[in-house]
Image 1 (tube, rainbow, N blue to C red):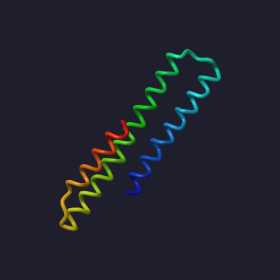
Image 2 (cartoon, one colour):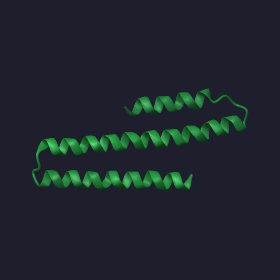
Image 3 (cartoon, one colour):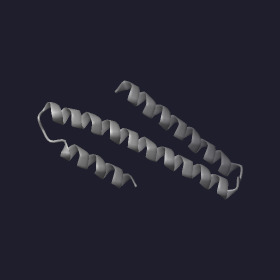
Image 4 (cartoon, one colour):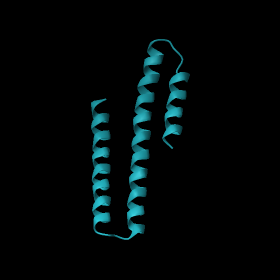
Length: 87
């Protein structure tokens, strides 16, 4: 899980850098189309990060459910709810 956390943190740091770039663009009065393009890229990166976090969480939840003899259906439904809520 540590490698996954490192990957997620790296993704979030890149997003943080993109956000700083957008603020700089606003300070420099860059064209709104360029700002919106960058914000769309950030939104996409955030969505991919959410997907990765949910997928990794789902994987471990299903594994734990299987090990304890429980159904994985509840873990799957929770993951779907998180993805839908994030949209």
